[in-house]
Length: 163
Image (cartoon, rainbow, N blue to C red):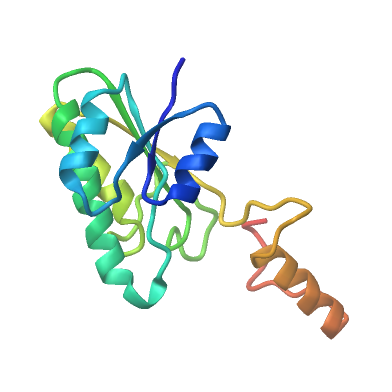
């Protein structure tokens, strides 16, 4: 297989090339570019997101538009559109399951993709873990580990059912 990866910067293009992917220049706001890339592909896996959470509503609107643009060229083709989502905002008070749907404001990608299904888009959602980490991680898990070391205990909310 051949991967076509979206790159908005020269550094991203170099990383894609180094990984063996073909580079498609553009960004999430360039809907025509997204459509051209999706039209050239056997399927689309959408992983991009603007993580500027000070502009959350704008980022969500951009993502919704991007998914809609890519989906518009996939409609009726049987080519898949895979988007990622998460588990934030699910099933308060009980363990979440695959049947739980997110609040629209929490995960716009999932809602946007599933809204394309009646239009003939073969849309799928992969719900990512709230924490993915490795030896070089600098995110959420190391923060919790550091806090537990500082306080001398590791705390959790409720009964700890969603472990």
